[in-house]
Amino acid sequence: MIVPQALRFLPTLLLSLVAAFGNAAPAAAETIAVIGTGDVGGALGPRLASLGHTVVYGSREPQRTDVEALVRETGPGASAAELAEAAAGAHWVLLAVPWTSVEEVVASLGDLGGKIVIDPTNPRIQAEDGFPDHPFHTSNAERIQTWAPDARVVKAFNAMPAEIMADPDLAGGPITVPIAGDDEAARAAVAALARTLGFQTVEIGPVRYAHVIESLYLLSVNAAILGNPVYMSLRPRPPAP
Ligand SMILES: NC(=O)c1ccc[n+]([C@@H]2O[C@H](COP(=O)([O-])OP(=O)(O)OC[C@H]3O[C@@H](n4cnc5c(N)ncnc54)[C@H](OP(=O)(O)O)[C@@H]3O)[C@@H](O)[C@H]2O)c1
Figure 1 (tube, helix red, strand yellow):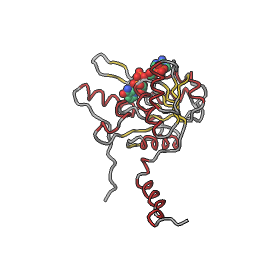
Figure 2: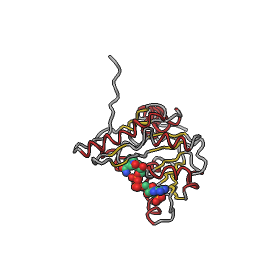
Figure 3: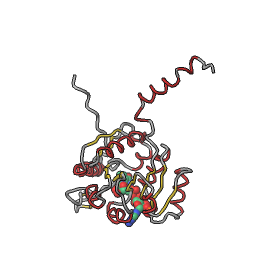
Figure 4: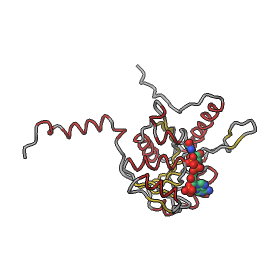
């Protein structure tokens, strides 16, 4: 078969594009259980599906009308199930539930051993002066790792509002996803996923540093309370000359 001259260079061109824009290329398709169908589940679920991942929502009421609508919006491969059923077939689990429910939710999810469990929760209590406080000296991510010791828990996606998860362009500039977790490969996989979703990433090490990331919520809420709302963007430091 005679291949037109221009087409002969197509594979090379495609490879070059992938190399140049590697961060925008979808990662391998995974089954991702998005637990919770509120603002965060509803923002990230459809986007994850748009990258080619199979999304199964874990809901207390998978037959509820709004859950069915979210499944339809997410696309033809999406579904909803009870929590344990959703997690059972998934490689990844996103805990998009209130921080106060996480212990109960983790207990209902069955065996999470080996699964990448993303924790976007922001634990906080209201202090008397109107500002929020972090409720403990560790972090929710560390607590989750204790409740599910064989899970590969990764703290991520908590330091931005749900509307930016749905559409990073609304931020008007780069958004950073800080990431912590004990399992280096899981951390790197979540970082790659975040980049395919259009975010910058910074890994800060084991899960014991997740409290640093959870504190960023206080940083942004307190700034907003004081009239200076901010987005979390860390500028990569250029190499030394
Ligand atoms: N909203 C944001 O902008 C934002 C940003 C960053 C991080 N976060 C964090 O992400 C998490 C989810 O936030 P969200 O705004 O999506 O919350 P949300 O809108 O209140 O939705 C939470 C979902 O979790 C499920 N849920 C509620 N109570 C539950 C319980 N007791 N047991 C099991 N599931 C329960 C519900 O889904 P079903 O009814 O279908 O079960 C609910 O729709 C929170 O921890 C929050 O701190 C939120």
